[in-house]
Structure formats: structure tokens, C-alpha cells
Length: 435
Image (tube, rainbow, N blue to C red):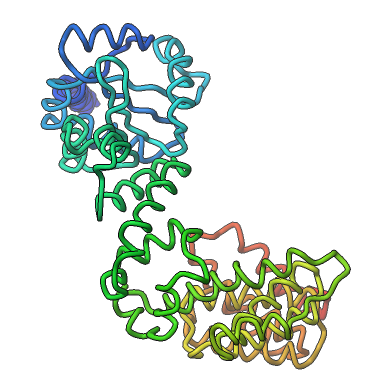
């Protein structure tokens, strides 16, 4: 017993010593509580300022503490060039006095820079001016690169903003800056920069120059900058397969066309209606067909009908057009997103709002197909079982629900086991599950 105790003490000593060494080798965070004191120290030591805004509940923040800040290489670089401060944006009952004294500064920085993600890293000059920012977990080598960029007057955020204001930022640098601003949640500035990129680059380039992988990201970040009158949209419509290959995203063209035409034509017409009005679907369809084509018009009108009737809780029409929409998919080999969407439609709409035999039969067919493709998904099996049960196929429903229960027992979702057991019991007792 004494030997074990000595070993335990020795191990504890080694662990403590390792922590102390890591703390001494890593980033040295200062406990100054006011920005004026931080600036004064940075000025006197001729250093920049590094601020880590973190939260106690934030996993990536903890990973930065455990993996990165204790790294000697990171510590050597940061300690030489920066006065470092950690600011906690939330509060807990166990916070130290030093942490509490920095609450006000944490709130000030969080508000001033509109921080939404944690950890957020702010790099300031010794005068307190923002030089650069970043966020999220980064391994040591990447984090050092970020710190190097922050102190580089030709690459940091401040220099990019200055170059943009002076009209010196052009081409891909504009796009990169727009993406960076978007990642900082500086949406108003991001859209201004993206608009200049569109005007000076996209509007003056050929389709083959425009359609690169970065264009798909541009659209996803700034969809409002493309309209039904955009020439690139017309070209993509006529060369959809070539466009998809160029950006590297299958179905990209169809996705963009549906969203932009739906927004600029369909939504515009629907929002002008009074609550009791019925959309003139044929007129809207004809407007789309004249400018695009009948197939595009048909697909967009079906999507729009599903959304319209669902928002107005007209369930029979919702189900009717959702089934048409599913049947228009190019393949019955559904990807997992499509499968989940169909599953949710059947659970939320068909099972809860329909007793129509055709709708239930089609729903059973969809779920049978989905479960053949994803046989170990308990939620898909549960939906299939409930659809079978409501269709009157009790024996098969019980067999499928038992399978779902067996799968859920071996999954991390242990809290759902009782729900599946109750569902199975109701099926076996001929009880109503979903009206």
C-alpha cells in the first residue's frame, strides 16, 4: 500500500511538473484589466496586442488551451511579438478574481467587434487599432501563420481594408477579402466588397473565366448579387452540364436557377397577394417559361406550390405537389439529404395530416426504397413502420419497428429507446399512434 502511494505521489509530481513546464514554455497571458494599461505595456515593449475572446462552454477554445497555447514554438513566437490577453465573454460561479476584473473589457471587445464565434482572435496595434482577426481552432503551425499574417502590413486585415478604401484592391483579392469579412460576420462591408468584385470582375469576364469553384462559394455567400437579369445565369441555363463541371458541384446550375427565379419572379408575385387570394400559378409559370423554358418553369412552380400550400396549412395540396416533386428527382437512389427530406415530409405531413390511401401507399414505397439504401438508420425505419401501420399493414409494421428498436439500442441515442418501445407496444395492442 505504501509502495502504491509513493508511485502515485511520484506520478502526480511528474504531471504537475509537466504542466508547469508547459505553462512556462507556452503563451504567456497577461492579467491587465484595462485596454489603456495593455496599450501602455505594448507601447513600452514595442509589441503588438493579441486578444483571445473565449467562452467556458466553447470546445474549440479549450482545445486551443490544451493543444496550442502550451506549444513552445507558439509561445516563443507570440511572446516575442505580442502582449497576450485572454478575455472570457461569459461568467461562472467559479471565475477567479482576475477573470472577473476583465469582464468589462471582455464585453467591450465583444461588442465593438461584433464577435459571434468563439474563440475569436483580435490582433491590435499598440495604439489599440485593429490589425487583424480570425476565429476557431487552429493547430500550432496554422496559428503561427495567422499571427505572422496579423503582423504583416501587406497581408493583414487593416492593410486589405485600407487598400480597398483607396481603390487598390482588385481581382481575386477582392473576393478573398469579401469572404474574410463574411467569416467575421461583417455582412454590410462584405456585401460592398463583393459587389465591387461582381462589377469589376464577374461583369467583365467570360462565362468560362467566371465559372470556377470559387464562383459557387461566391453565390452561396452573396446570392442577392445575382438576379434573373444576370447574363451568367442565362449562359448557365443553356450550358448546365458544362457549368456544373466547371464549378465542381453537380446540380449547381439547377439549384441557382430555382433559387433566383423563385426569389425574383415567384416570390415577388406571391408577396403581393392578399391573405385570401389564390396564386395565378399558370400566369407565373408562363412568365418563367417565356424567359427560360417549360421544364424549368414546371419544376419551379411545383417547388413554389409545395412551399405555398405548406405555409398555408393546406395539407392535401401540399402532399399532392410534394409527391410530384419527389417523383421529379432524377434518380430514386436518394442521397442522404434527399432521404432525410422525404422522411421528414412523410413524418410531419403525411402521417399527421392524411388518411388518403394513395398518399400512404406512395409514402410506403418511398420509405421502403430509402430503407433499402440506408438499412441501419433507425429513424428511417421508424417512419417506415409508422407509415405501414397507418396503411393497415400491422404485421410488417411491427417487424420493421422491432428492427428499428434493435438498431437504436446499439446507438448513442439511448434516450430514444423508450419512445421506440412505446411505439412497438401500441402497434402490438392495436392502439392509435398518429391520428
